[in-house]
Image (cartoon, rainbow, N blue to C red; front, side, top):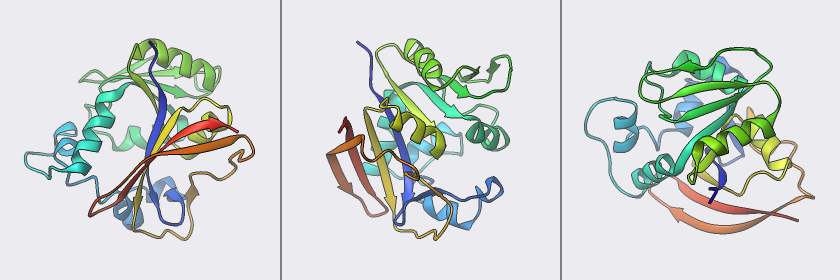
Length: 206
């Protein structure tokens, strides 16, 4: 049985998931947005940042998101930024399908991550990811434009937002340009922790 297609992101209270400039991805605002995840034990272990770290519901959610994911899809902008920032052992440990116009051979990294470059659109990338994931889920990793393309195409089953107590004021909005007349949401869960509020929604066709 095929798994779900989902995305999971951190978002500011005013609706942004990233700064406008890729050069600011490790800047103050972005670091504040992601502050909840950096101390988590599973996150630290996955990126080989050393021992220790927090355990609790935030950590459980990070681990559960990783464990459910059999393959990921991302856009070229996210890949370009990540290629510069990810460690040699990229943190996915599954196949990753990059939606791009660039022709490029698969890029295999230590630890089980292989990036495949798909030149014929979001549906082709998702088809390949589904085959690779088997009965596990496919995660649309980002960025916002890629997530939105899948939402507007009716290809997302579920999503989770870690709503952070941060205001951006400007940047890249998660739902900028969403086809709101087509998309209906059903709340599945809401879980506040000390750092963020985790919100999960099922996506339905309106």
